[in-house]
Length: 217
Image (cartoon, rainbow, N blue to C red; front, side):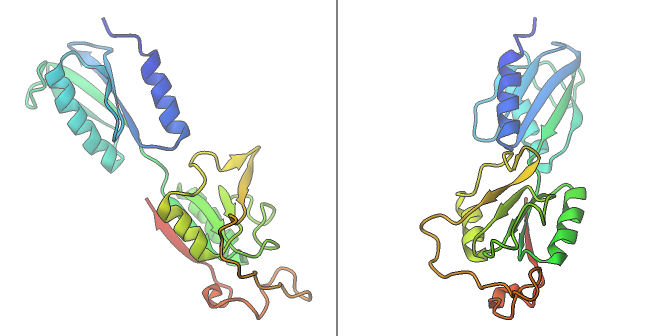
Protein backbone atom coordinates (compact mmCIF):
# COMPACT_ATOMS: atom_id res chain seq x y z
CA UNK A 1 0.00 0.00 0.00
CA UNK A 2 1.45 3.40 -0.96
CA UNK A 3 2.75 5.52 1.92
CA UNK A 4 0.98 8.66 3.09
CA UNK A 5 1.61 11.26 0.33
CA UNK A 6 1.13 14.27 2.64
CA UNK A 7 4.89 14.84 3.30
CA UNK A 8 5.59 14.66 -0.44
CA UNK A 9 2.97 17.26 -1.24
CA UNK A 10 4.23 19.51 1.55
CA UNK A 11 7.75 19.32 0.09
CA UNK A 12 6.32 19.90 -3.39
CA UNK A 13 4.47 23.01 -2.20
CA UNK A 14 7.64 24.28 -0.50
CA UNK A 15 9.67 23.89 -3.71
CA UNK A 16 6.99 25.60 -5.80
CA UNK A 17 6.79 28.55 -3.39
CA UNK A 18 10.56 28.93 -3.62
CA UNK A 19 10.42 28.56 -7.42
CA UNK A 20 12.89 25.66 -7.27
CA UNK A 21 12.92 22.76 -9.76
CA UNK A 22 11.04 19.70 -8.56
CA UNK A 23 9.41 16.64 -10.12
CA UNK A 24 6.79 14.20 -8.88
CA UNK A 25 6.79 10.64 -10.25
CA UNK A 26 3.64 8.55 -9.77
CA UNK A 27 2.96 4.92 -10.73
CA UNK A 28 -0.29 5.08 -12.71
CA UNK A 29 -0.47 1.49 -14.00
CA UNK A 30 0.97 -1.92 -13.12
CA UNK A 31 2.93 -2.91 -10.03
CA UNK A 32 2.61 -0.45 -7.15
CA UNK A 33 -0.12 1.79 -8.54
CA UNK A 34 -0.30 5.01 -6.54
CA UNK A 35 3.31 4.93 -5.32
CA UNK A 36 5.07 8.30 -5.52
CA UNK A 37 8.60 9.65 -5.58
CA UNK A 38 9.47 13.33 -5.20
CA UNK A 39 12.77 14.39 -6.76
CA UNK A 40 14.58 17.70 -6.16
CA UNK A 41 18.13 18.47 -7.34
CA UNK A 42 20.46 18.58 -4.36
CA UNK A 43 18.00 16.79 -2.06
CA UNK A 44 17.37 13.17 -1.13
CA UNK A 45 14.30 11.74 -2.93
CA UNK A 46 11.15 11.46 -0.85
CA UNK A 47 8.84 8.46 -1.04
CA UNK A 48 9.35 5.20 -2.92
CA UNK A 49 8.07 3.46 -6.03
CA UNK A 50 8.45 0.02 -4.51
CA UNK A 51 12.15 -0.86 -4.29
CA UNK A 52 15.63 0.73 -4.05
CA UNK A 53 16.70 -0.39 -7.54
CA UNK A 54 13.60 1.09 -9.14
CA UNK A 55 13.93 4.26 -7.06
CA UNK A 56 17.56 4.77 -8.15
CA UNK A 57 16.82 4.30 -11.85
CA UNK A 58 13.68 6.43 -11.71
CA UNK A 59 15.46 9.23 -9.81
CA UNK A 60 18.16 9.38 -12.47
CA UNK A 61 15.63 9.52 -15.30
CA UNK A 62 13.35 11.98 -13.52
CA UNK A 63 16.26 14.38 -12.96
CA UNK A 64 16.97 14.19 -16.70
CA UNK A 65 13.35 15.02 -17.54
CA UNK A 66 13.37 17.86 -15.02
CA UNK A 67 16.53 19.28 -16.58
CA UNK A 68 14.63 19.47 -19.88
CA UNK A 69 11.46 20.74 -18.20
CA UNK A 70 9.47 17.83 -19.61
CA UNK A 71 6.42 16.01 -18.28
CA UNK A 72 6.19 12.48 -19.67
CA UNK A 73 5.27 8.82 -19.19
CA UNK A 74 7.96 6.15 -18.74
CA UNK A 75 7.87 2.35 -18.43
CA UNK A 76 9.97 0.08 -16.17
CA UNK A 77 10.27 -3.42 -14.85
CA UNK A 78 9.55 -4.00 -11.17
CA UNK A 79 13.30 -3.85 -10.46
CA UNK A 80 13.97 -0.78 -12.59
CA UNK A 81 14.58 -2.64 -15.87
CA UNK A 82 14.46 -0.23 -18.79
CA UNK A 83 12.92 -2.44 -21.49
CA UNK A 84 10.07 -3.91 -19.49
CA UNK A 85 6.58 -2.61 -18.86
CA UNK A 86 5.63 -3.99 -15.46
CA UNK A 87 4.62 -0.49 -14.44
CA UNK A 88 3.90 2.90 -16.00
CA UNK A 89 5.36 6.01 -14.38
CA UNK A 90 3.95 9.49 -14.87
CA UNK A 91 6.66 12.13 -14.42
CA UNK A 92 5.39 15.64 -13.76
CA UNK A 93 8.15 18.28 -13.94
CA UNK A 94 7.89 21.72 -12.37
CA UNK A 95 10.74 23.81 -13.78
CA UNK A 96 11.29 27.43 -12.62
CA UNK A 97 10.15 30.20 -14.92
CA UNK A 98 12.90 31.65 -17.11
CA UNK A 99 13.79 35.15 -15.97
CA UNK A 100 14.19 38.28 -18.06
CA UNK A 101 16.11 41.26 -16.63
CA UNK A 102 15.31 44.52 -18.43
CA UNK A 103 17.66 47.44 -17.78
CA UNK A 104 16.18 50.87 -18.40
CA UNK A 105 12.67 51.91 -17.28
CA UNK A 106 11.55 53.49 -20.56
CA UNK A 107 8.46 53.19 -22.73
CA UNK A 108 9.94 50.36 -24.80
CA UNK A 109 10.39 48.40 -21.58
CA UNK A 110 6.65 48.26 -20.91
CA UNK A 111 5.98 46.71 -24.32
CA UNK A 112 8.84 44.24 -23.94
CA UNK A 113 7.71 43.26 -20.44
CA UNK A 114 4.15 42.56 -21.62
CA UNK A 115 5.41 40.27 -24.38
CA UNK A 116 7.81 38.55 -21.98
CA UNK A 117 4.97 37.77 -19.56
CA UNK A 118 2.91 36.23 -22.37
CA UNK A 119 5.90 34.03 -23.22
CA UNK A 120 6.16 32.84 -19.62
CA UNK A 121 9.10 34.89 -18.33
CA UNK A 122 9.47 36.24 -14.81
CA UNK A 123 10.15 39.92 -15.54
CA UNK A 124 12.53 42.14 -13.53
CA UNK A 125 12.89 45.84 -14.44
CA UNK A 126 16.00 47.62 -13.19
CA UNK A 127 16.68 51.38 -13.29
CA UNK A 128 18.42 53.73 -10.84
CA UNK A 129 15.89 56.50 -11.49
CA UNK A 130 13.15 56.12 -8.88
CA UNK A 131 10.80 58.44 -10.75
CA UNK A 132 10.71 56.04 -13.72
CA UNK A 133 11.00 52.64 -12.02
CA UNK A 134 7.54 52.47 -10.46
CA UNK A 135 4.78 49.81 -10.26
CA UNK A 136 2.39 52.26 -11.89
CA UNK A 137 4.48 52.31 -15.07
CA UNK A 138 5.26 48.59 -15.05
CA UNK A 139 2.37 46.74 -13.37
CA UNK A 140 3.17 43.62 -15.39
CA UNK A 141 6.66 43.26 -13.88
CA UNK A 142 7.26 40.69 -11.14
CA UNK A 143 9.95 42.85 -9.57
CA UNK A 144 11.30 46.38 -9.95
CA UNK A 145 14.84 47.12 -8.77
CA UNK A 146 15.69 50.79 -8.17
CA UNK A 147 19.45 50.58 -8.58
CA UNK A 148 22.18 50.80 -11.18
CA UNK A 149 22.22 47.98 -13.75
CA UNK A 150 25.62 46.63 -12.73
CA UNK A 151 24.47 46.34 -9.10
CA UNK A 152 21.18 44.74 -10.10
CA UNK A 153 22.84 42.25 -12.40
CA UNK A 154 25.49 41.38 -9.81
CA UNK A 155 22.75 40.74 -7.24
CA UNK A 156 21.29 37.99 -9.43
CA UNK A 157 24.68 36.55 -10.34
CA UNK A 158 25.60 36.29 -6.66
CA UNK A 159 22.19 34.97 -5.60
CA UNK A 160 21.52 37.97 -3.36
CA UNK A 161 18.37 39.01 -5.20
CA UNK A 162 14.90 38.76 -3.68
CA UNK A 163 13.64 35.16 -3.34
CA UNK A 164 11.82 33.82 -6.36
CA UNK A 165 8.09 33.35 -6.21
CA UNK A 166 7.63 36.38 -3.91
CA UNK A 167 7.78 39.17 -6.47
CA UNK A 168 4.17 40.23 -6.20
CA UNK A 169 2.49 41.55 -3.08
CA UNK A 170 -1.22 42.13 -3.35
CA UNK A 171 -1.01 41.96 -7.14
CA UNK A 172 1.66 44.70 -7.34
CA UNK A 173 5.34 44.21 -8.26
CA UNK A 174 7.90 44.05 -5.48
CA UNK A 175 10.02 47.23 -5.48
CA UNK A 176 13.62 46.76 -4.31
CA UNK A 177 15.75 49.78 -3.40
CA UNK A 178 19.57 49.82 -3.33
CA UNK A 179 21.30 48.19 -0.40
CA UNK A 180 23.51 50.38 1.83
CA UNK A 181 26.60 48.95 0.11
CA UNK A 182 25.39 50.10 -3.31
CA UNK A 183 27.55 52.41 -5.39
CA UNK A 184 27.40 55.99 -4.04
CA UNK A 185 26.87 57.61 -7.43
CA UNK A 186 23.48 59.40 -7.62
CA UNK A 187 21.04 58.70 -10.44
CA UNK A 188 20.67 61.41 -13.10
CA UNK A 189 17.94 64.00 -12.51
CA UNK A 190 14.99 63.64 -14.92
CA UNK A 191 14.09 66.52 -17.16
CA UNK A 192 11.43 68.74 -15.61
CA UNK A 193 9.99 69.58 -19.02
CA UNK A 194 9.48 65.94 -19.94
CA UNK A 195 8.78 63.88 -16.79
CA UNK A 196 8.37 60.60 -18.67
CA UNK A 197 11.45 60.92 -20.88
CA UNK A 198 15.02 60.34 -19.60
CA UNK A 199 17.08 63.53 -19.54
CA UNK A 200 20.19 64.22 -21.59
CA UNK A 201 22.25 63.31 -18.52
CA UNK A 202 21.41 59.62 -18.89
CA UNK A 203 24.50 57.43 -18.39
CA UNK A 204 26.04 55.46 -21.29
CA UNK A 205 24.21 52.24 -20.39
CA UNK A 206 20.91 53.96 -21.20
CA UNK A 207 21.73 53.32 -24.88
CA UNK A 208 19.75 56.34 -26.01
CA UNK A 209 16.73 55.44 -23.94
CA UNK A 210 16.40 51.91 -25.28
CA UNK A 211 16.18 49.06 -22.78
CA UNK A 212 18.71 46.28 -22.53
CA UNK A 213 17.47 42.85 -21.55
CA UNK A 214 19.14 39.67 -20.38
CA UNK A 215 17.34 36.35 -20.20
CA UNK A 216 18.22 33.66 -17.75
CA UNK A 217 16.91 30.12 -17.30
